Image (cartoon, rainbow, N blue to C red):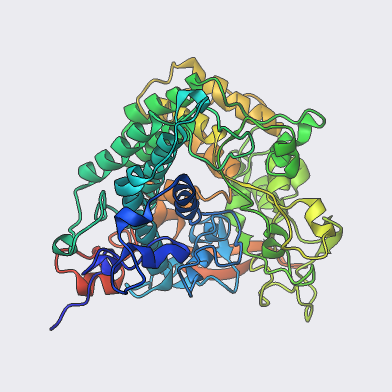
Length: 561
């Protein structure tokens, strides 16, 4: 049977590649008389700048931001799967509600290789990887005059080259985290090379790590423009190197690269200058950027611009509720005195399980989640009025009785349109680095490292929690329990939980069985949401898209698909 070209290289066939950079696609082939060659296309700094922008555009955001950010596509449905907040519903932290995302087949354990979510991620990431590779092979053709006073001694074109290399590494990393080792595209692929095979995990990790390290050499510590936090820097590369090594359990390298971020002496956790008790909540608001936060390492510019519309219920300016927090997540928050629910008597544990009032708990709980009947953002959020648009389980309303508060800014609710905000989303922040360091030190058996307690206490103090009880948490097992809980509550809905439960190999424990929400009024029971299934022999990775497997004899499907 005649083969179709695989999706990684489909557009690269015959005469270079038909796919390129947005409206510039045609300039990379000679299929028509009005098109030109690579040599003629890459001719000045403006062209380079436009391509850099296109390669940044598909970086994931917080909540969905509609709009065709990729002008080369008539279908931008991949945007629906490019939002970290809503896709927390792929983990035990929540349930995806948004009508623009369908994750149920994944969480029910029935997803196949034709599922839209994995296919969209695969296709868009490889599309942008191809663009990055083309840039890296051709940017030197442009005629560019040297900068008179280069920022941190790095010429602009050299910095752009490093940014593109970091982007290519990041897109490979995202694919690796979700699919396992995937074909490495490190140059413009020719027709003869189009059927690529999958590398070993060691080869995959080495490629991504080498790319980040190489990129970091020509990246500044500080963005040239202060508010361009979305640009790659040395710190961002170091942070993602730590993240990569955390995923594969290379604790020595994970700790090493976390230390490299810390040694830059540039970052710190955010503390509100006017309201320290609400520093945790404020770090996700406009105020943090107004106050020049040092917590942000890499952001998606305006990645929360539609957070009000995406996270609010239908009665609040036609909200879509996005993702609904689970009872499991709420139970993970400690009491104010640092005790967990598991340390309580059976009667007290049941009381907090059924009535988890945020006033008695870790303050991050009330700063992250909106409870039934709570008045906030100028509205009363009530999921229990039958027939109301906000009724639990209704279209675009909460699935659990809870809503996400963490990324909501009161000022966005005063706008005539709740998609008119301009807040940014932190893809990587300094607290992640500190938690990486702590976990890596614990896994290395270095439990006498004083930074373990120092960094955990720093994070907890900002949230209004007491110091770590060193009499209780003084073994590797207990410290592991603590840092995993801290990661869950501190980083909730930021897109890390799915990766964490995968690398800890606990997904079969936390993603199997019933999901519950808030307490049902006048009943001593929690609202039942859904039943999930997770097959550990299959579901730790997503399926390679069927179109790829069918058209590439050299690529092997993940087991069970």
